[in-house]
Image (cartoon, rainbow over all chains, first blue to last red; front, side, top):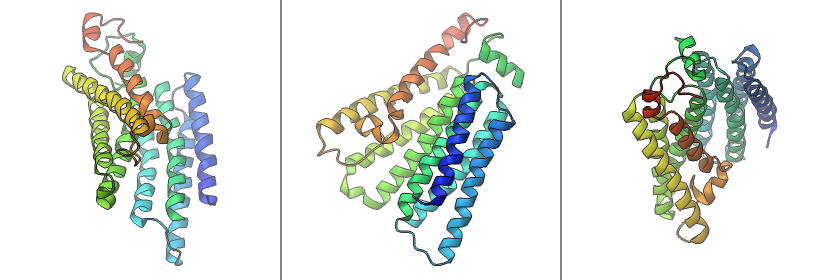
Length: 117
Length: 155
């Protein structure tokens, strides 16, 4: 597990806990929960840029390269999709949808790490 | 529009024949993630190593289709889509129970991981939990209840 994974782990867990907490407190999605999901997307962007730089620098992905980039692309689609959906229906349940993003991103980042090394 | 949906979720106004609001949104989101990941995984397994375990990988593909159908049908309104949802979620429940049991009893025929192997252990047992929550949600939002008592149907 490399630094990118740990960044996504921390950001993802914090985001999930914030969104879960807001959902349990029966709050609708607010700036805090939405921005925490934006932060997950930002962490993924960091991982994306870092990975591109490493490939250009000549580093070799141990597993299937297209599988790695497939995971990356899918993971990066989740935060925008969840935010869009939570804005359409601003109930506490949308916070649980947002909460799912952080955990999913961290599981996918773990898988991406396995593929890379 | 948004207010109507929010009120529908709390049961203050007549509930429409839908399952894509309130807790249903979380359910659809999780089903969606499983639809994507199961499809990607099955596609990868079948394209790269199908001959190693054809049965397991065909089951993977079947599971992926079930998740896709469940996701779409839960998001749609109307009684027909409700029936499709019930069918998909029941198939999913039977699938995870049968494959889960077989993967324990007959590890020769089911040596390779599928979403439903060992009751979905590789996915935090969410595959086992999802159909149960799905059935509870479908029952609470069943069309007959919505039609019979529009004023106090939800929650």
